[in-house]
Each structure stands twice: as structure tokens, then as C-alpha cells.
Amino acid sequence: MPTPEPFGARLDDVVVRYGRATPAQEPAHDPGQRDAATALAGATVAFRPGVITGVLGRNGAGKTTMLQLLAGLTRPTSGTVVVGPEGALGDPWEDARLTSGTQLVRESGDLMEDERVRTSLGYYAAVRPCWDEELAGRLLDRFEVDVRKKPTALSRGKLSAVGATVALASRAPLTIFDEVYLGMDAPTRYAFYDEILADYAAHPRTILLSSHLVEEAERLFEDVVVIDRGRVLLAESADEMRSRGFSLTGPASAVERAAAGRRVLHRQQLGGTVQLTLEGTPDDGELAAARAAGVEVGGVGLQDLFVRLTEPRAEHVAPNSKETVR
Amino acid sequence: MFDGPEPIYLQIAQMIRGQVLAGDLAEEEQVMSTTQLATTFRINPATAQKAFGQLVDEGVLYKRRGLGMFVAPGARTRLLDQHRAAFFDDVLRPALAQADVLGISADEIVAYVRGDSGDSGGSTPHPRKDG
Image (cartoon, rainbow over all chains, first blue to last red):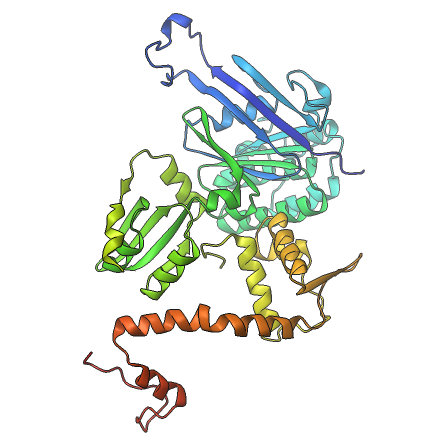
């Protein structure tokens, strides 16, 4: 079966409110405020087709709601959601063409409770036109899942592994992993990353991977979307996001001088050694000056950047402290 | 690995340049495929492709249709020329600036480079306490 064209996906000013929130309950004095029932508060974002995108956000930021919208599992209170191949995007809600091309898996593996795993897998195979039975079998072997068991007899990690298997073997043009790998142990996670990369390289498709824990997985991402309190904080390439910060490590005074004028996202001190996480990208002059002063310049992982960018507080180094250097 | 401040694809390109310079990758030798590179280092295949693209533009690698990426003839010589040219600015200048900060004199450095530090034991001179 040829690989189908990867799906793109787009949200436009999407609001999702759970429960029976009436307009009178809305905090009219501050439209930026989000009440507990509002999962998405005006989210706008486009996912590029054929790309692995990391969807990052703290717990309760709205990640799961956004992914469920894309999979047609829920509808927005207002705004529009479209997915599909280039030029033929549409509302996924109750659209067989689009939902059969979209596979969302969660940590639970989304299996029928009182059936053997094998039975649930049979249903997935039946509704996914590109299902690869051979791949499914190989992955279940690799993850050491006994498909004769019922989900209740499987550990959290094994359920996640079944979810990962379903997602990969579906070869869906839009494949969504919602916090799938959190329950896996380290060897299984590494196997999971390797399998994603190998199968994605052979069968390019749109893959969304959501998590609040991304340190290991962040190099898998080509694009990154950060959701914060129901809104899209940023949506850009992983390289662009990485260029939002860098670190300086070394003797405190030298680091402070090299950091002059930069916004400090994080500060760590161990005796006389300081590590500062700074906003922006160092230019060649700054790099050379820092290194000449014995300061080590390093990159900052997406995990750290995500944590720093979603917390509002940050200090400034006085811009004029640079004068003392030269 | 790859935890410098530069984009990962540049760090990968630098790694491959280093392998060519050191002779670990010979001219006309095939390099890893995008997929191999991606799975070996657990990076996005697009990142691997970007690194290869950069090296093809520089003439370090070239593509043989249907076969993969190979080290270009003359790549090592060209890299040597470039790196020799950059050595003084990129490597020596920061080292000398650091020496200046530490109060190490030009004479001491020259003596060290020549290997006649006055210390009969070995080539590594003892750090001076004064200065």
C-alpha cells in the first residue's frame, strides 16, 4: 500500500469550554483570564504536513483538548478546526475520510477493557486502511506484549507500548501520540523513539507528540508548539526555539560580565561557579569574548526553555555592567 | 552529544567535517544514510538531511543518485586549508586572550610551544605562582 499524503492541520481562534458555562459566568472584566471550565481560550496554530511536531505544555494547558479536536473526538465551542491532505482540509467531526486517516493514541492504549488485546488490535486493523500487520507483530514482540491478555492484566508501560504499536502500525497520515511514552521504562522509550524515526523515514507522515516531559524526545521534533493556559505561546521550528536561549557557565564574575544586558531565564550557582540561562542567541563577538574569559557557552534544551518560557518571572542583568569589561 | 549553542544540524555537519579531517572518513567513502544518522543519534531525519545539505553545498560530500552520500574527492585538502586559515582566529586567539587574563607571558608560551620549558622532566611546564 503506497503511503498516503500526510495531513496538515489547523486551528483558528478555537475556544473549548467544558460544562454548561453561560455567558454571564465569563469574567468580563478580564478577557485574558481563563476560568476552570475553559480548556482552550482562542488557540490559533497550523501543523505542517509530513513533519514531526512536539506539542508541549504544562498539565492542564490544553494539549489533550487540542489533540482531541484534531482527531474529531470533540468539537470546539467556537472557532474552526480543519485537518486533511493539502488542498482538501476539512472539519474532522464525523467525517469518515478524515477520521480514518487520523490515529490518536493515549497512554492507556485505548483498548476495550473486557476483551483480549488481540481483539482490540483487530478492530484497529479493520478501520485503518494502511494498517501494517507485520509491523504491528514486530513491535509487539519488541515491546514484549502478550496480546492474549486483557488490558487489566497489563502494566502501565505495556499499555503504552500497545498504544505506540497501534499508532505506528496504523500508518495514518495524521498520527497523534498524547503523552504516550510516560509510562514506559527507559529501554522501551528508546526503542519507541527508534521505531518512530525508522518508520517515519520510510513512510513520511504528520506526527504530533504531546508531553510535558520532552528532554529525551526533543531531537525528534522538527517543529514545536507550546501551549500555555489555553493559548498557543509559540509555534516554530525546533531550531528556532533552541535559538531562544543559551547558557553560560564559569566563574561568577566572568559569567556576569558576559551576560550583561541579557534577560536571565534561570540562574544556578555552585560555589563560585554560576550557570546562567539567557534569552536570545549569542553573536560571534559575544561567543569569542565569553570563551576568552573562560566561560563555557552551551545550548539550552527545549525542556528547559519550555519550563522557563511558561513561567512569568525573570530577572535582567543591568545593561551597563558591560562597560566594566573593556 | 550535540549540546552546543549552535543548531543541531550545524553540530552534525561539524562532526562529519571532523571525521573527514581526521581521515576517519576517506574520500569516496560512503557516509551514513539520513535514516541511519537519524536513528543513530535519535534526531529528526530532516535535521540529518539539513546537515548533509550543508556539507554538499560546501563540497565536502556529494550525492550519488540512488546510492547515497559520499565524501567528495579533495574534501580533506579543502577542509585542511579552511581550518588552517581559521586556526589562528578561532583557536589561538581565545587561548592567547586566556593566557593574557592569567598573566602568562609570550615568552612562556613560546617556550612551551618549542618544548624547551626548562623543565627537564617533560613538555608540560609547571604553572608559575607569581603574575
